[in-house]
Length: 148
Image (cartoon, rainbow, N blue to C red):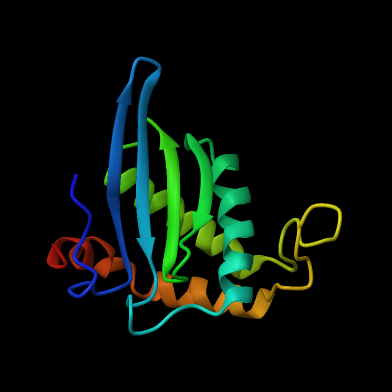
């Protein structure tokens, strides 16, 4: 699948960015876009904290999520799954994880034993991003389609 035109994006959006079909099964990379490329970005402590939240919560939901990685441009996240290709299921999993972020009292794994930059986190920033994304959930799919 060809990548998206970054000039036409309208975040937030959730879409399949790439699929890899292997003998062991399908690997699907999802693009959860939060900020407008080349126009805005998410501050590093917020991206870092959301990476910890999503990377911890999504696999715990039994979703087939292998890993969550921040985009180097700080505009969103790659979510890599084993075989999960259903948009409605992924959308529900991400929304459920974001709802848990709102209820959290601390960023998971944000300590010197489990994080390479433990002081670079913000619970409040992650919760603001979670609320912002949840408030715009109906547009996630529409934004991804319109930016092709």
